[in-house]
Figure 1: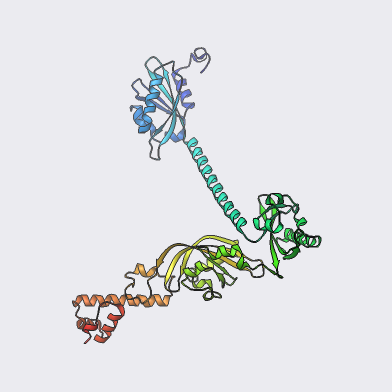
Figure 2: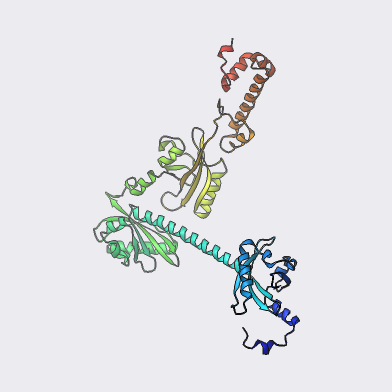
Length: 466
């Protein structure tokens, strides 16, 4: 509110006042004492193009949405009292492009009860608020995803039977160790953090490991080293790999205790047991996609009894549409190192198929580079079996669903069987089940017709074969 409006604005004429009001707002309304709009001015070109100029002569309350009408009544009521403070209310005007939010304040002017409603367009503010909400939701989803991923990896880290250590690459100090490592080192997990990594080995082993870690930091990989622990004099095979976490580099070190001159068999490890009992299929193949090992869940999916039946076979035999899915999957693994949620199908040995989702990873290092696949069932259907007597497809749509799931040769044979069966059924219907007439209509001998009736299981023909 101006301090001395009569002295500073006393000679302001109507034309100047109109320009001032229009310039200071996005939309301005002149409303009489009955709430009827008498004039409209626009300070925003966007609002001018919305057709609001047609409001002149209409009640102001009818230009807003239903939920905004109480706010208009409140604005008109507060403007009637000259002592009431200036208040702002947001209302929505219906438009072809959706509701337009306007923030109004009403001022009483003149001796005739006329009011000036000054409005500000809130669409820009609303858009910014929506972007903020979307950004916040996106951040929350990302944080949730990271928390879930961290939880999964932490669980795997804790339950792994192989001793694993996390070492800071710059100063070679221990950051973390899983329970298997603390048990091997005979130390409390809380006392391990911050300790020098090389101090857990004897002097000769420490030199070899120091050279190994230098190679890891320089090239990202290094050969395994056999070392002796200083605490209990036990020998173990040390392998290391480099990874980055935020802005710092760390080294993941695996200690495989040597028992009777060899590494502890993996078949006795907890990790192996977990993989064996997973409800999802798990398969390891060589780089040529030939299966090295598979868990019982995968054998169940492909309808086989033991691992020997799949070992050495191409995974293409069961996974994906022939020549399409598996090539795309392996290409992505080679290019990116891993693939998640790859949707495809898995074919069983006896005609069934599963809709599955595959996550896969490439392991290029080690003695035997390989690919690992986890296969999760996302829904089961049964493929109609070729040459079935009672479950042949009845339409082109059903036949096209088999493309990619059964060989073309079988698909063509099955299509011919469908057509032949339908023709025989039509002939029997036209002849009112007179098989002699149906055979003549189809150009077949009676014996040939009976043979086809038995093949397709259309009816019992033994009593009519004489």
